[in-house]
Length: 107
Image (tube, rainbow, N blue to C red; front, side):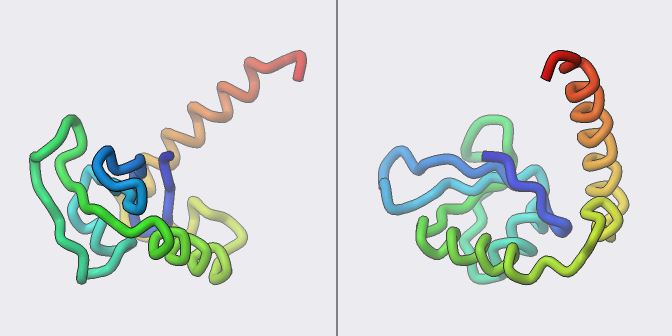
């Protein structure tokens, strides 16, 4: 699952070794820390294409995401992203999705 937060982009998948944990990956270390907190152990270059990763308890991560949803106060997601590089990625992502939508003429 890809998760686009206004302070970080994460890829979240099942932990192959522990069904109670999730493997949370990021392109930038600070995305993991900004979203998951400074208390997580961050591993570097131990997997495939995502440089940064951590393991998080499923329930704890679910609560983290639920809390973020409960605290949404913006009316435009892209405008809530303060980091210039992250904002640019999301703008490009938005354009790709808009084109994807536009190609679906039949609905």
